Image (cartoon, rainbow, N blue to C red; front, side, top):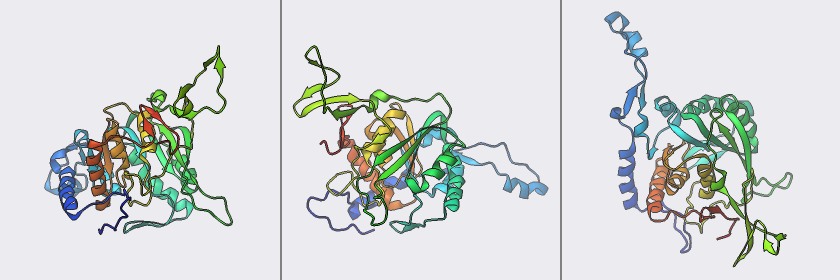
Length: 337
């Protein structure tokens, strides 16, 4: 893939040919081998007359969970799902193709009729959810067109807890409709006993009407930039900045999620050292954010170039673990930095 010319101030990620060759070796070394599998079924039948049956019922080889830590799997998810072990992930973040025509650098997703998209979703979502542990949390990202199908299918396999709506300020105007500038994230859990750390995702909000008690600030602080308070996060997020050319996390991926958004999900619904699974990894935002926040990751992405982008971002994260809009354990307002 040819890297486009960048303006001097453009921070969008690029790869040189040398980096691409080096990272390709790293990526190949991450891919599972036959030594990293275990059998989940008993021995196949023996005997010449049963040879055909034995072949059809051969033991299913699945990847061993310990060999999925911190891996970017360059595979077609639908081919890989039968090899993924059950219950290995503490948190699952799913950002599949929405029901839109979209070109993912040569791999095209075509919009379908609503019932066809629902059938496509039903074909893989149960297998992805089977990768989650009992008590794990699941976040499923979508837009208004596919949100209904997501809720219906997710409810069959998990306990739906909430629907987050976040403002995507890059929405396009429309002459005969409302401007579309929001997306949804369905929050669900596998069972009732789940982890949620609200203190890890507190938001810093500007105080417009400060209240005092005995002459002292009540539930807010005076800072150099003004008056602020920490508040509990709601299911309406208006503080997200979609990556663009002047942000170092930006890539050429057409539907890249912000690190800040993924950080909220990871901090709220996992503990340090937990494994985060992302079956549609794209340019690696989940893997990168997990590493920055001290979590393990396992991601799947069929586009090899995207995997190379993710590997370079992981290397950069070793030197810089900052996340735009997140500072000193608190989430800031949009464009606050």
